[in-house]
Image (cartoon, rainbow, N blue to C red):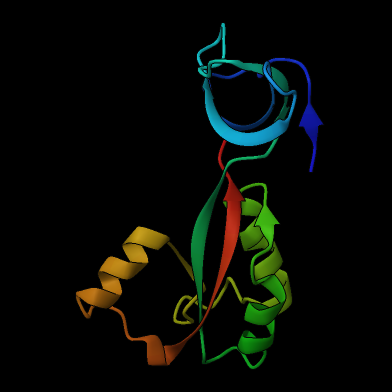
Length: 139
């Protein structure tokens, strides 16, 4: 974890460490930075946790024709990617995707909410896919 003592460059919510003005004890709390100040009272700012904001993406790899689909799903599980392109390039390489064959199903991606909706509405046939999840850094 990377803790920083300067102020964040972007307005938003952060995990911060504060020091009590009364007893001097250190606490970790969620706080908002409005670009000028933090929103807590009777606490002195110590540092903030610099984490990249990510989105969970569901990756569905067709069982056929990829013989190593399950292995690839297990290998990418919970990994963090800079963007969809980086994920797509890795999957194409590991699976040996044939871009000339238009009949072959390719891996598909869903946001977590979209995936739940497809499953709950019974529009997604999970039996045809190996499923994993990754994180994509939001920019």
